[in-house]
Length: 297
Image 1 (cartoon, rainbow, N blue to C red):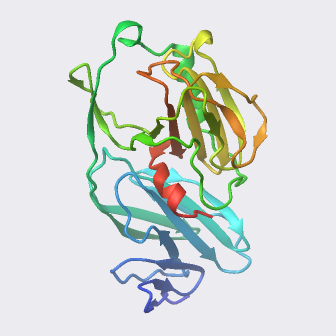
Image 2: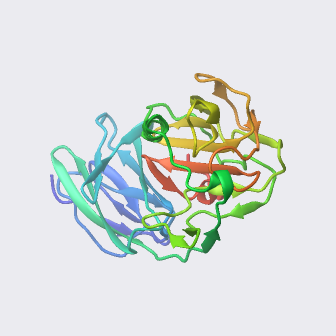
């Protein structure tokens, strides 16, 4: 098959024609031998900490999922419709801005694209832990269970549309904050989520549909996370809710947006009543604000 041609549309998208169709927001022309690889990226101008969503439309009848690689890591591409696939690539505040080399393969053809990721400023906070909260260390059991939860990748997409806030309180700590604990900078650390300063006992609700796959209690060894719930939204997207005073769900339970998960508390490594909501994509913490303000379907 001849090399696919690249056509520029007025909406600033490029479309490659011929085996898989890829529509992409980029400023460089490429040719893909033997296939129409073209992917639609969102957001159009990604920044550090955001999720890069790659939507791929395949040639009718092509059922095998394409392979997506960035920086030596392979990301799953899930079927999301007839001849349609999607992969999600997380970025973090600890990375350097600049181009990401994205390799998309659909046997036997491969192409590499450059996706620019912009820099972003993140806040700095100073946290003082005193008394019983100072020097808290996670248990081995806690670390293993939470790590296994964050790596959850189930094939079914459970969420629909924008995520909602899990609590009505104000956001007291945004995503990506670098922190000094008792005067020392926490290296290789950034705030992996949003903190909500709701009142003690106020409701914590599911931000999107999902299955409860983790329930942990401070009294059973979750020293840092406190009373914690993990929710699987499907296809490598999971939410974690920490420091709660009460948990109202059990493992295996299916939740809809707005269903009550528990109540705000100050269990674990917490300086006061608040909820920590962390959102992970393919085991990497990403900014939940993007998922609340934009529908990723």
